[in-house]
Length: 394
Picture 1: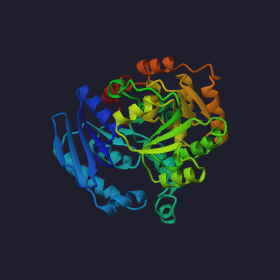
Picture 2 (picture 1 turned 135 degrees about the horizontal axis):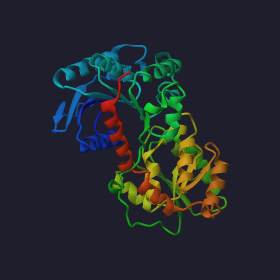
Picture 3 (picture 1 turned 45 degrees about the vertical axis):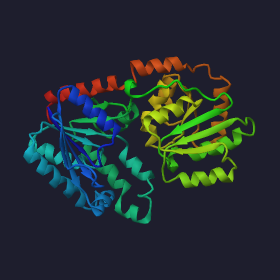
Picture 4 (picture 1 turned 90 degrees about the vertical axis):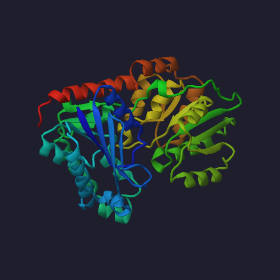
């Protein structure tokens, strides 16, 4: 099949989209990718045989208008014109829309061309917007209505032939909207073990090093970890926290670290590439996924979860539904109440004192090899497209 993928941001990078494209090409599909070129630093057209990339320059105004996509027509019009031009050049067999916003465009072209529509939900979009900083300003609330997004999601997803979600909990949530569960498929953000470098580095025995990698915003819950660390240090003084990543919440966390007199124990190490990150992970004792619990994080499947399990690192995770389920299933760690520094402290001491006898890091590692890896998930993607060939259009 020749598949038109639509992605409303720059490409690359997007690790999930890159993996999907690679897997589909390996299964003899051709991919035409439509994306925008916000910074203007990439070629507007690339063709390597099995993958064609069309990039459309986008102005700052149109880019920012995406927040009001359901109220103002500019952003939809931008994509409709862009895709129409591509379709004059390409004979497309299926449309694959990444994330909820542009699903409306996918529906229009599905109906026009009488071809199947696959909607790939990377996240719970309405829930994500409800907690986003930019939609909770005075102007943001005017331009983006949470109620309107909920109605849009329920209405528009009924027109999809196949829906991809990243975790079982997300599949259940979508089916409760009244959508046939048979057309909702789980393809998780698992890793390809061959692409994740394991190193021979080992932790410093003088310290217990807590490790976090990812974005730095209020919803990642690092403020809870830092407050918990101040409690832990009253009983155990050789604990430190390494934070890898960047984000707008870092200045607040640095201020909090100073107020709690933890500058010697908390290190902000900035963004690291995959190899650098894996070395720092190997030198750590405990890996953290401290996300604040919400409708969005209850249905999440972060790539780093599977990296930590594969690296055989015990995990302290907040009690978000999907995270807690997978950590318990893989016997790779324990959970704590997401907004409680006191419960984090309790879980930390349970972990280092081996009070939870269910932890089996080798068992978790084998779960990555046999279940939670991209070879398995790419097989699900291949099966989805094989069935799409025969699928009766709605």
